[in-house]
Image (tube, rainbow, N blue to C red; front, side, top):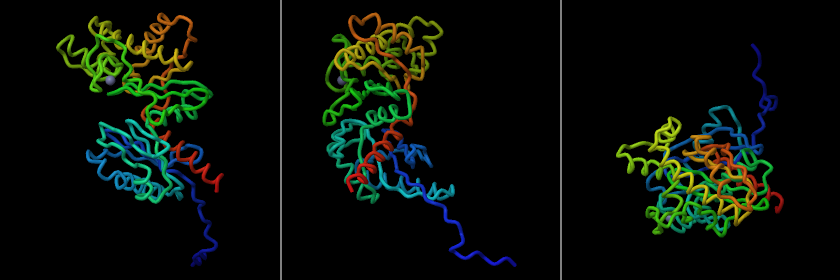
Length: 323
Ligand SMILES: [Zn+2]
């Protein structure tokens, strides 16, 4: 009979240092444990509870526990050194406060404090789209860029700007591209203004405009397919959205000098059906401005979660440097 090895002779598996990255969306919370090389060790996706604002700390803590259990079940020894949480709406990253999220139902929520206490991890808070742009600069379509606009086109439209290598936050108020007015005769926007980009060029705006024009319901991706098939009503609806987007992008290019535009979100899944006419429209409207490169964002719906990991690792490294 072979004697059992003594404890000291069992090779110990070195644990991998990870951060917990959590992207809280209106429908889903996407999370992952991410190592310092920004590789995901394990990931989960769970529904965001409708009353998440009442106990955000408990929700994030439960998600982090699931990640740790998942890593253990997969035989990965991990050591969590921090947590990054990204959320939509107006976010003051410096204070770690969610200033306003209409969808998630909070105002002035001290997210960093709540999650830090609940998880016991040093916690940083970010804006989902700004963090997504950070991830795109390190892993995606903006690698090597100094200036970029990231614009995800989904149910709504948000924006994130990087100028001279810095992502602009404006105390939480920067990048609200969806509420730039582009058509004074356009539809009313829930924000109270008229003709905002979001009510003309978001996926829901395209779907609504098609239904109003034809009396037939269609998701934005179905409208895109009908554009490819040359259906005149779909082409007309699409051109309104493309034109609005071109105006907002060109205004941003003019003000900030960005030379790279990353288009993401559900509507961008139509690929060149959107990007080709968008490039043409920007070029037709452009006078002296430097032509921006307009490309598809690379990280899809993982951008926010990977961005949360980038923020958490940056914080962990600077804590070590300061300490
Ligand atoms: Zn608006």
